[in-house]
Length: 79
Image: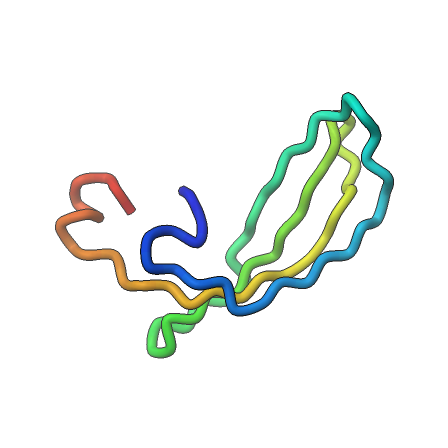
């Protein structure tokens, strides 16, 4: 899934750099859903980045305002 996605808006993001990233490091970014409030279309994510050794290099949270996924798009596997 790509975020924020069509119609999605980043409202805020916090980042804490917890370890240096060096030239040549391979970084993997992940997002975990912490809260979904459909009545407000508000999505809160935990964001983490790790290096090739699995060590955390960045931690944070992001808040997004998301558009609903149309039923036809979800059934077609485009959610």
